[in-house]
Image 1: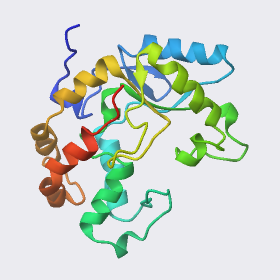
Image 2 (image 1 turned 90 degrees about the vertical axis):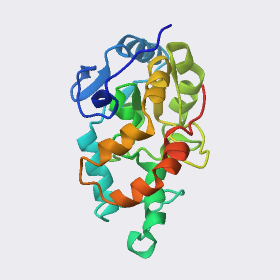
Image 3 (image 1 turned 180 degrees about the horizontal axis):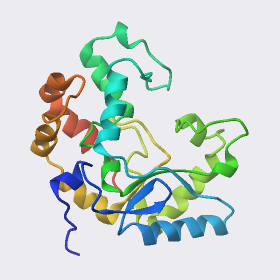
Image 4 (image 1 turned 60 degrees about the vertical axis):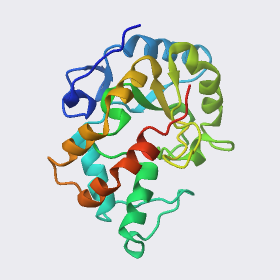
Length: 228
């Protein structure tokens, strides 16, 4: 199968021309919709209500998330999902602690419309808001049965988990599924120069440090994923 290509603006989340609205405020790549719909139907037959917590996320949205964390306006979590005092650590330590949970704007897989954070609202306890944390999805969590079902079923619909395990980069994210037939191509098209040049066009907190560390970030937090 020939690779699917996207423009630099599409790869970095700056335009939405590759997307279709699948549900209110939920955009997916047009080639993902059929297989994700089939996955939802299979989940329904087995008693799960598979909803999208997050699908496409624009560059601007990812930039806002990044800048608020870097500025200390949003909590930064450690590997145990406990908030840290960001003013008590070095700039480089802060950079990598943010990267453990949040992608750089221009380098998020959510820019492509191929990657989806999923949950089942019927399993969410009353008065409890969704956090997208491991404690919800792993053993003992209220989404643990959904996690097991996804593990047994997503591959037949073309999906996999790029962050199934923590490999020393991005945190384990049991909720994050990716459409392999497209996402694999898009990752190969997202090169270091494109990320660097895109970031230079915007006001990004920690921008000079990011540029300095970008080769390491690219290897450890962008390309370092679990294979299907």
